Image 1 (cartoon, one colour):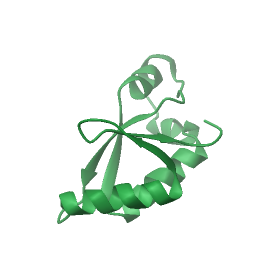
Image 2 (cartoon, helix red, strand yellow):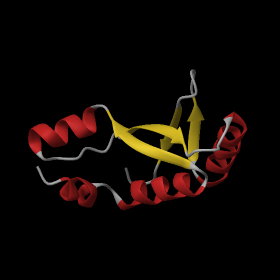
Image 3 (tube, helix red, strand yellow):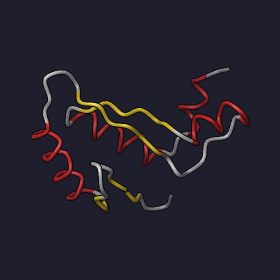
Image 4 (tube, one colour):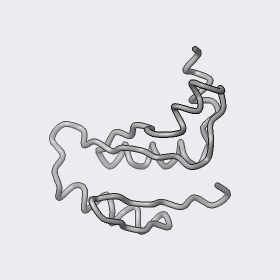
Length: 91
């Protein structure tokens, strides 16, 4: 399986969001149906579920700053258990 095609098929706006999050000190991992569907069918969907992990040295305070900066730049909805839904135009 060629994982470079997975990256190539991700929407540009999503890749921009991942870079934004990384610059704020968090790594993004795509989880759930998207990687499963890619493995089974080679297709990447548009409902992208991610897990964020702090880069070493980051804290819960940094999480609050991330959410604040996301709120300034994206349409977000904070759900329970530190789950955030981010809507990207065109997706």
